[in-house]
Image (tube, rainbow, N blue to C red; front, side, top):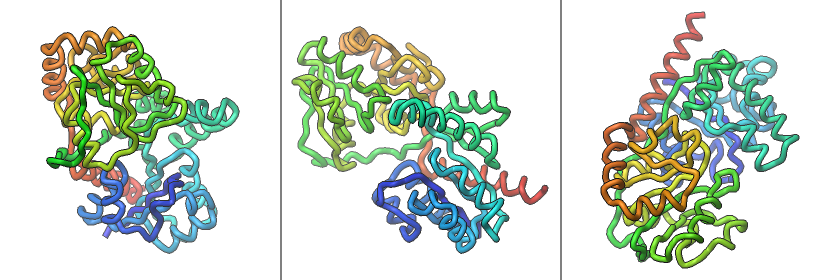
Length: 344
């Protein structure tokens, strides 16, 4: 039986090495929770380690020697060099590959969140992680291009999304606009969510933006009758809100975001930031990408045929995989990397 250790920078305290995959999936039924759960279904034995273990090389080395993974899958810039260090200097068990799961542009995020000096360190670490790992999985075409510039070919596996089950009566929130936009997920400054909130100040009150997720204090001044913060909702309620949307919004300058696949499952037009999203969408064909949200939102609200066409082309052009299908892609890639290790 193959053994997989998740080495993560997770500092939420929700999960640790004792958390079974099924319990993690119940609380976190997407991204790593869904991938881990479905890899268990495919025959892997998995263990999930949070930053409390992974940030300390001696603790991590003891876990590696105890668990004896075939694959250490690293996630998060702060800890992803540690299993490489442990394998070389601290572990008795060395017969494992280190695969990095590359999501964000780490240095940019640290620039925005922590400042330029920490960001410079993370830019340096990010390149070391990508160049020294035994394999890299990315869900970003932009990061794939960056890796090639460093001499590394990253394996592309996108995010997944299961078919949403919208339960009748899951919430009593009714979207009240003539045209309703919905944004879900994180709203940190580097996600640029404030830009669409600012745009709502210049649009009529019957065009409404509903945002679900933790509301950051810096966004509260934007709250109005057409910019409505619903807060963090239970997943069934969030899906019920999404089912009422006329269009979805994604504001980050990223071409990878779990919300993209979830949005696509609903068959509604997507409005996004005109930047790296061009590596995922074809602007004007299967999404509307802009840096002028006011004009773009007016355009969508006034043109039902444009909305229908964008959604139809997105369904034709962009495959969306279930989380089981995504796990199958990880399974195949991990097997490939293990065969490469054993043949050397």
